[in-house]
Image (cartoon, rainbow, N blue to C red; front, side, top):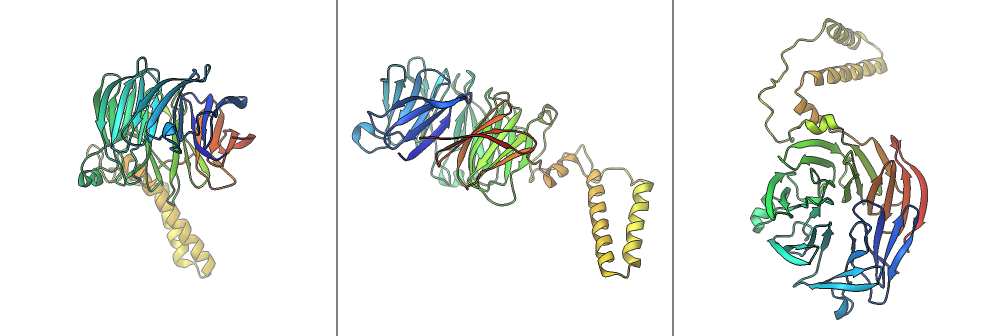
Length: 388
């Protein structure tokens, strides 16, 4: 059977998979199938509600009863449909927590009360450059919903990297955050709804913002070359951010409390006027002597290799010292933080990622399920299973 969708539940204890002729649920630890249903066709989307018996399923559209416009809420214990919702166009995403169900179409977002499946609110939206709406819903009952800003074609182009923060519990907007100049590719909100992670279609920089005030608290460099980000996910306590792409690489970025309280300005923002540029201090006597020594070795050297080596040493020394005289905002721009750990899969494939303690679960669109031990540097593969 061809694999059509994969997604973890809210605490990464289970994996839901949609196939062209069935849909299944797997336990992650130990890995194994715990539910399957094949009598009503395949599934284009399968979303779980934590580890409860409720799952949301969208069909593949191969027959009228399995249309992609219909959402089915299924009780896995009874293998019975308990609710059906039909929409005017195909369903692109489904997000759930214990309070809210969010259904995303190409031009609308619907918010439902999970307890009674009552429609509470609808939001007019517009698809971005990828012809889809980017969104996420926090797992906790606070029900923070984040999605790309919409508008007319001109407005959408101007705000392609802007995220709207919406309180789906109280049905009111919270904030609008300008995240990137380029269109958004992927966004994720932490379990408690306090942090927002974003990546643009370029896929080189990943940013983390504080939801309450929109301040940027982290900026990470994923890589130097463009990549399509397939997953952004926080671990449960939002101390680590995971990022996977179509290059087959998974990166882990540390979200320490000290840096979370600080805010670094974006590359095109004004430098804080409270910090002068350059910093009002002179170089030390030791630094001056080292510069003079390197200059003299460069001027006095006759050997070509020696001159090249001393010139390189001079450049590196001046660069490393010059950074200490720049405001912290500029240093953040020049050197975004990098990952502390990474996974390199054997093939370039899209994946979804879940981090639990020091173990990372990686499920790929090729039908592989990996368990890695996360440690500084390259992570260690512990187990490998097939999603089938």
